[in-house]
Length: 153
View: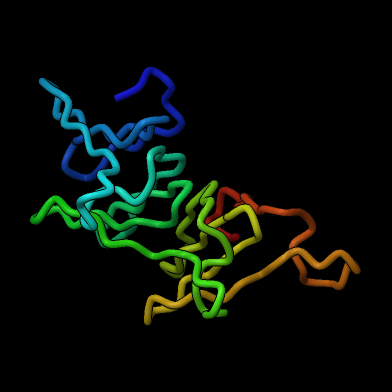
């Protein structure tokens, strides 16, 4: 879909997934299948670029875009979307997703333009946002992307 590749993941089935400037590519060893945003299809990739990828411990593929967080439904080959809603403080803090991480407990963490988000089991988010006053425990910048080798965020 585009020569600029932002991220690559190999899933448990052996597929290579490439997040690019113009969509998500799946390589099976023989050919590419390209998934792109289609404004006429609500089940398509939510945004034009795929900037972050993660396959979680359950085998779900998560995709970070400039238009939110998507989870790929493998059997139906469609995308389920989670987006920022300014009226809902339990939604993503921003649609611009930079990174996705799963910690040792299986909790999904999403770094966005506005801060760090912890995904709750019910699919809502707890936000950890930048606090310019420097309060302890606040995110120190506009976004966050950190974890140690032991899986601690």
